[in-house]
Image: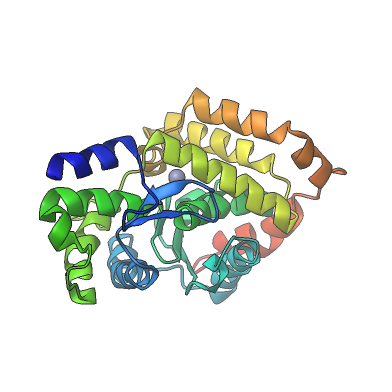
Length: 284
Ligand SMILES: [Zn+2]
C-alpha cells in the first residue's frame, strides 16, 4: 500500500477517484494535495510571525508597507477560483537578505534587501506575482503532502482519519519554517518554479503590468548573486537558463504581446519617488 502511494507522489500520477486528488484551477493540473483550504490557511497563519521574527521584523514605515500591499492586492484580484478570497497578507521584511517567499493560504514576503534592488513597480509585481503563483498553484500543499506521507503514512495523514487543525499545524509548520534559524525551509522543485513564473506573468499582464519586467527581476537576482555570494532567494528559487528561456518563450506568445501592446508604463518613477526614496530614509 505504502509503495503505491509513494509511486503516486513520485510520479505525480493522480486518479480523480482518489481522495486528495483534484484539478487546480490556476494550473489546470491534477494534483495530490492532502491539506484542505482551511488547513493551508492555518499553517500560513501560524508560520508567518515565526518567519517575520527570523527576518528581523517588518519595515516600520506604513507607507512602504501600504505600497507593497496595494501591489499585492491588485494582483490577487486576477487569480483563479476562490484564491482571491484567501486571507492574503503581504510582508515587507526589514532584512538586508535578498529574498522572497510565500506560505500556503496567502502569506507573501519580500525583503527590504530585494525590494531595494528593484527599479520599478512592475518588477515588484513580478516578484510578488511569482510568489502568489506558488500559493495559487498550491506548491506548499504538494510538498507538505509528500512529507506527511513519509512521516505519518497515508492513514494518519488523513484520508478519512480524524485529524485536527492542531495535528496539521504540528506537522506542517516545521516543514515550512526552518528549525534553528534557517529561515524558510521549504524548497520548491524546478517544475514548480517554472509554474510560478508562468502564473506570475499571467497575473502581471492581467493587472496591467509589463510582464517583461520579470526578466529584469531575474537579472537583479543574478547580479545580487555575483555581488555577495548567492542570495537566499536563489536557494529557494534556483535561477536557470530553463527559467529564462521559458519566460522569454511565454512573453513572445501572441496573447502576451496583444495584452501589452502598447507596452505599459513600468511605473519606474512612482517606485523611485514613493517607495525607494522612503526606503532610503533613516527609519524608513
Ligand atoms: Zn519561486
